[in-house]
Image (cartoon, rainbow, N blue to C red):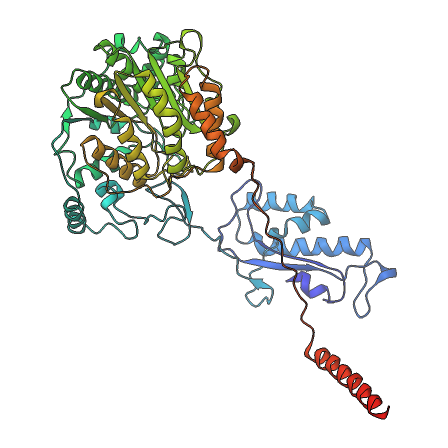
Length: 598
């Protein structure tokens, strides 16, 4: 290159060097590809005459200008032979107007085909980082590891096709292994005859995102597929549950819950495949799926209350407990639990209990029934002072007007709450209030996003915990119980939990056992806070509040004792230890000699 032929390299002199990819096309033309050669151009030794470097020529400003003009001229001559005339003229004009700073900032303009140039370095290729999303929990993963960093599920596990019987640690291996697991599972459980109805329709799987975004939406069709596959593999459905035929809810039935404007908005946005909110999508099948889900819930409620079925499970989507009178939000379009409650009342039920254990507060259900004392709404959810979605559901939200006291919110102050906290709240709040209310019909808004492993809920409820809560609620209202699927976004967690719940509906005793039955300190505080508020409306809670305060009051006041840090002893060097002993030996020896002399 001309530049290195005319300038001497001095390692001790101040210089700037860089390695940049070359580009021989200018004026808006695309750059060459990444495999183009690059050159390292070093600027050094350019000093004024009074500051010249020893052993190298010195330059003034005029010399620099002349030198750079010659460099540009030579570089242009080498490049112009391979360029079109119009491109050459444009490039020459651009180079003529360049300053020294421009030349440094555009080193790519210098191109030389001299293969013997020792400054040549290959351009480093861009390193492509592999990214994939977990089928089970939708979380993003990087690299070649085949197991999810969050849930541990294999990249190609059969959770969607085989349900929770598929191994989470290996690729889907086929039917034989799964069938053997189903056989072992069935041999460990005792079956009893029951009439449990189950509502499901494949058309609800058509509700999905129009445009697949980089990260999969957590409320996806695979949620129903995984649960259905688990039920099929366990021989529960089809087999032991009675299916009911699906129908779309009528406009008249929907208007008992939602405004006409809301119903029309769902239909319109579905036609145009518009989003309701940033997290609530719709496609051409969404309105139909929402009508089917609501229709199944209404019919299940009627079937159960009229005793044509003992109980039931609504395997439906989109979920509903965030949908209010006038708005769709939080993945929810129509409020399925509210539709079912009013359908039960239309069939003859006077009082209905809705127990919502979804990790998010059912703000839509609360809004719909906040004035209605014939429907008792109890919700256990993360709240954290209103910082957790949707921000509603504080303990002091108790209903309004005639419905005051018929809204019971149990707001957890942090994540990580588990079986012990939920069962403790059931024992001291849910069961006493529900028993005094004495419902004719019970509905569970069963979101499984408080389950262990859920990416959104981040709590620790186990399938055994859900089974235990279902068993408790099944003792109310003469067993007339409808469970409606709400949230839950870890496929293995929701499918395992749903199967355990349905087993309780079938009259089976759960194989899983609750391990931790004690509440956390944060959970205990929440229970006491709710009791203090709700005992104004439910007098039976007063004795429980007093008893808990006397038993657990000191526990709440206790601060964890800080273990005193042990002072680290400095180990003295061995030579110092021996030297100290030598001094002591000499001192004692001298004393011994003096004593003998006396």
